[in-house]
Length: 95
Image (tube, rainbow, N blue to C red):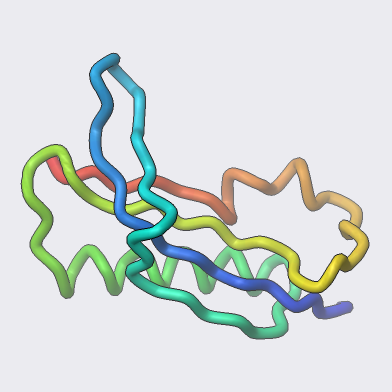
C-alpha cells in the first residue's frame, strides 16, 4: 500500500455550552507527530495516541483533547480519505 505523510495534532478541548458541542484550542498543543503512514496505519496510530493520552493524564471534568491527522505538504488525497475521516479525528472529553 502507498504511504502518505501525515501530521497528527492533539490540542486541548473542553465541553461547550450546548450538548455535543466541543470547543478546541488550537494554540494549546498537547502532542504533534509527523510520520509516513498508510490510511489504515494512521487510523491505528490515532487510536494508540488517544489511548496513551487518556491513561497518562488526568483531565478535569468537561476538559480533554481533540485529535486530527492531516495530510502534509499539499499531497493529493487518496481514495477513501474523506470517507474514513472519523477514524482519523476524535474528541475526548472527561466526564
